[in-house]
Amino acid sequence: MKIALFAKKTGDGFIEAFNFFMKELSLREFRISLYQPFYQDISRSFHFDTPFTLFSSCEELKSLSPDVFISFGGDGTILDALELIQDTLIPVLGVNFGRLGFLSATSAEEFGEALDQLLNKEYEIDSRALLRLTTEENPFATFNYALNEITILNSYPSKMLSIGVWIDDYFLNNYWGDGLIVATPTGSTAYSMSCGGNILTPSSKNLIITPIAPHNLSIRSLVISEDSKIKIRVHENRYDSYTIVLDSRTRKITKPVDIFIEKEKFDFNLVRLNGKEFFQTLRNKLLWGLDKRN
Image 1 (tube, rainbow, N blue to C red):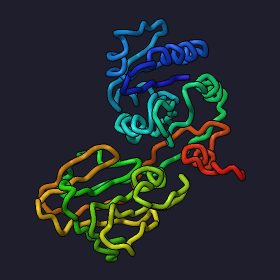
Image 2: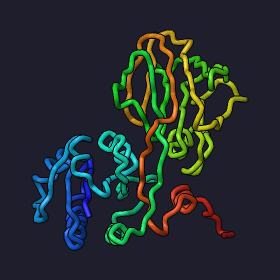
Image 3: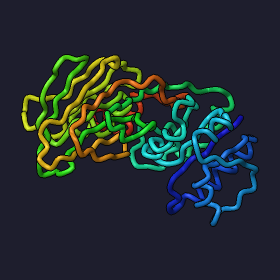
Image 4: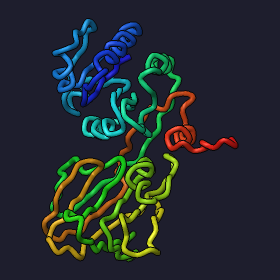
């Protein structure tokens, strides 16, 4: 079985943990590929006994055709992996080194068990919807899609934005506030949730529009069909710039443009191991049910 390994940070304790990971992989005779920048960082303090190949781009990863892509880190690391995965549909297994980890399927302590499930095909694939952004300026070039959310933010937090929104050419509302989030079901437990948005199950065929600090108490998060086509126009902007954020990638916009958002044509595949399911994750991560009566 071919495995691609990806990580971005190598902080305290990671070398010891990675040594354990490599031993577990070697015992099971996985064919290993390593993300080249990660290899360069870790090779100064880690000796590799197991044969491996290197990749640094989506094209190189695609040519290696791994069965599973393993991401070591938090949810942010998985979001960073999206640039390598793109439209390849290679399933991603997240090993959580972060703090909360809604996307990561397993912990470092469960890594050996997770590998056995991979070998025995005891897992399922969760296909997660992506959002595609289109504008006249095309500031994100071909990497213009997001797994969690697309966000419009004021570049100057002390001032409000006025943001007009249309759904399938029907006018929805003009939002006054700090910004606006359009989130996928995957992103419903991220920034949108922090702003009071609904939580959606990953298989929901919906999107969420969530205002950020709206200057109107009657404004609430709205759930719409994933087939909807969204148009956004920023009206009020005294400093003639605002920021568009795709997951964690930002671009400053300096002239009025219409922003179009819709579901991407391809999905992002996550590995879901046996015994792991979304409602269990909600209970564990958000401490639902932490009540002495339960």
